[in-house]
Length: 285
Image (cartoon, rainbow, N blue to C red; front, side, top):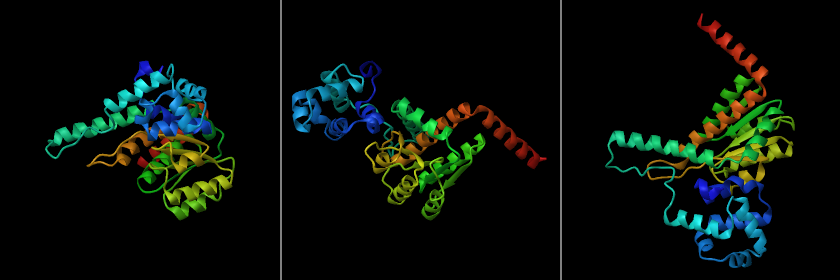
């Protein structure tokens, strides 16, 4: 249960957002946008505000892992009054070099822990299955996300699955136009709202390409478009943008996809890895 695991209510909401019905998304949006209103309202008031049945609100609370509405209110109130120590340690200009090193490392550790916390097993299983049934995989990202896309190509190349990465918008459009329903495109965007990337996503959908999204925001255009979405968890501070920590989490999500795929396609992956090691060894001779 959520109560015994001290899982953030808002992170849990984001992690299952894509699987929610329209009415459930109304409740989710209400929690994410107006958490203070939830803790000061009864279940009847919330249901009246959203024009949904009390039972719908109650079932949503149960879906999050709470015994009921009151338990959700208590957990949410605790987050507001005593916020969970989040992604970044506060860095001050008075900090020593070593203190900054320690805080940066701790913020990265937190980003990984919280990203692991918000993963939905159904989502991840679906993402792995899309890759397993693919003829090829393409990774798309712009700017900092492009670095993650290149890492995705580098990892999956070792599995024997034809893998490519595109970081230029024109090249992305050209590449995705050649994909089919038997291919998978992985779109990486911290905000999930990059207009150039979303144009590529839309073209992929037109071609019936299987799509996976990786983003920090459940309420984003990317989340609404792709077949399955995986989430990171990070926040911004004065000296470090949230995208920096999320990049580490994005890399780890791709690591997890890679390992899962390698296990599912063990023989293929072993053969590909052996061939690569032999090729590299020959180069060094």
